[in-house]
Length: 219
Image (tube, rainbow, N blue to C red; front, side):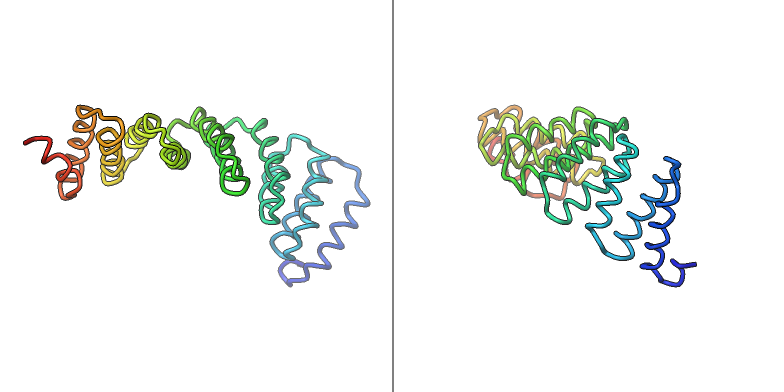
C-alpha cells in the first residue's frame, strides 16, 4: 500500500521498524534487500542503499545480490577501488561462465578507462575470455590495447578469433579485413594476409577495401 501510494519514506520507516523487531536471519535478509531496492530505485538515496547492501552481506557473506548491488552503486559514486573490491568478491562466488566473464570484463574496464592500468586490464580481459571464449567485448578491448602498443601478432590473432566468434557476416568480414591489413602491413605475411582478405571479400562481396588491397597482389 505504501509503495502504490508513493509513500516511500513511510515505507522505509516501516521496514526499519520491522528490522528492529525480528531476529530471523532470513527475514532480516529479505528486509535489507527490500530496503536497498527502495533506497536506490524509489528514493535515489545511494548511501542508504549501500548501507542496506552491506548489512545484507554481513548477514550472508556469499550474497551475490549484495555484491552486485555494491559494485553498481560504488561505480555510480565513482568509488572505483570499492567497486573493484566488490566485483572481485563476486568473481569468487559466481559459477556461471558468462556472468563470470562479464564480471572480469567490468573489472577490466575500470582498470583501463578509469585507472589507466592497461597491463592489469589486459589480464582481466584475458581472464574473461578463459571463462567465455566468445566474449566479443573483451576481444574488442584486447584488439585496441595490443594494436595501441604495436603488438601486431596478438592483434592479428585476436582479430581472427573475433571473426570466428561473430555471428554476423558483415562483422566477420570487417574483422578479417582488419586482420588481413595487419598481416600485410605490419607482419609482412603476404600469404596469411591474402587468405584473410579473400575470406573477407567472400563474406562481403560489395566491400571495396579488400579488393583494393588484393588487386596489386594478383598482378
